[in-house]
Length: 208
Ligand code: SF4
Image (cartoon, rainbow, N blue to C red; front, side, top):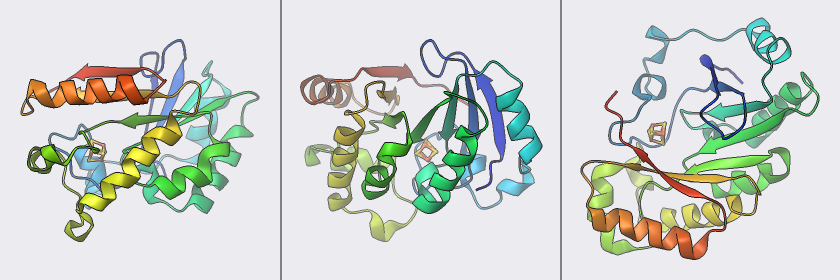
């Protein structure tokens, strides 16, 4: 598995000092993605691969207690490849925690990885459970592969949310896209409150 960016953070997970590793590619094409360059085909113009030495230095010789595997979309890769990477990273520091960030569109892979990660971070980008918002949704986040862009795919994302909810420290997040209505966000907030045990938060939209 190859990473193309790394950074440290005290903000991405409450009470944790994290190192975040970024992979290439994403199956979504979200409105105002904060990471467009790394989820596009020409990403190598902007990024170079992080070496093993850089990974090991970042984990062994810094006080990080958590690794975040992040976008593009981590789960576009095979679970075998991800598990191998997780095992390698865990071996670098005793008791290190591992979080995977995902858009939730790979439910089966989340099931396979469930016992290998400490928790997930899942974006609730739209009200997947309510087709009333389908047209509004299309403006926000179409799949890159248009053939996959079907209502049935959303059922999998709801299953992903419910699976992630079983992990004690999972956090759910929704970005307040300025092109969505308040009704849209209220629908998400109400559903999350009713259906999820773990915290759900709204993040302000940042114009990158
Ligand atoms: S899921 Fe995340 S990485 Fe992928 S396009 Fe959307 S915002 Fe960007």
